[in-house]
Length: 489
Picture (cartoon, rainbow, N blue to C red):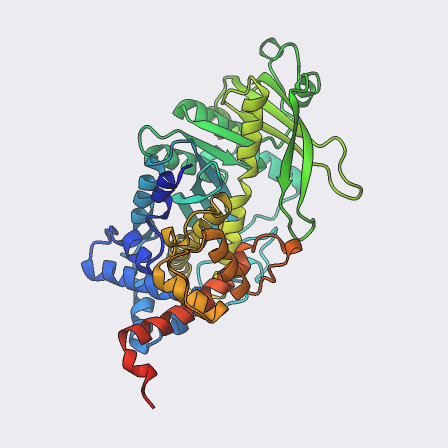
């Protein structure tokens, strides 16, 4: 993207927390006072995202107003999300490349607050300590990995888990229609993505192995929408439509190698970040529909589905490292190495939604919230979901466009406050800093050491720096509004 193309991504950007009012201004909650309270509460929480509600609001009156808002049944999660979805659509329209919509699920634990009502199990049993809410999202990204915003979100509490053995569970699931399963979340998000995406924008849904069930592929077939998902099982094939092959892995093993490429593997608690060299193969196959029982048989798709399979395999992983081995399914063209390699790149961007979930948990500490009722927590989570997209914007714009002028994303007072705090001077307006330089300063403010071996600052450390920056911003604003304060004794 050129700088002009980036503008649609950053229009919801800085000017302190004015972006919150722009992002939420179109909320239709049936009451103008309630809309104003939404904007006000959003601004207060955005200024201090890791703080409890009372600390972020600052005064008792503002705290009461926030609590009344989260307790108001008119303030639905859908109503809070709607204006953000509309703004996301505007950002999508300006993209010259396809928009990648990542679907994923995250679990929020509130079991440490036993008095909270309306929660459900989030583990394998009904343990009191493993209770909370589940959130499924469809978050739009550019192909460079910059987040544009949410298109779909669903928050719910799971019902109590029945006591049954493994075989009883298998039979129950086989006999249950997809609409009655938790897996229907993938279909709902797919339908909402198609309905809410602006006309003329090419959208590709990207998802992990949990989305690999036949009804999802069938739904995409009916909606005529593009997808790129990771295969969970080695599915049976229709040999006549798969060059005589009977399984996906068999078809890929017999396919020629199109080429080799490097894939960035992000670090997590179990592995270090590294770069893997993978071989790429593709095969056009036709999937057999699975066997169903009971209601599932009556409502299920019964026709074979043609897909393209992509294998991205690390033949020689480093000693002690788990080999990268992805099998991807898509209805997009992968006839050449360039086309297949592009799809591997797109799937690698899926880590972005997991990082955003990390922002909500580790950056905003949403699981510490004490609203005591599931419906209140759902409204709170929705509002913080919108706030959380902002930091992802800045962090990934800095990586995708490091030389972009910082003033394209951050306000003048934010840059000034950052320089005063970190460099003990005012920025040189004749030589404006780049986005990368500014984001690195925010990282240092959050504890990033900035050594060559440290790489770029991560989202959590940026979030800490972001919060500390706003303390300096507020002080600088007060001085600008009341210059006499610096001369008073």
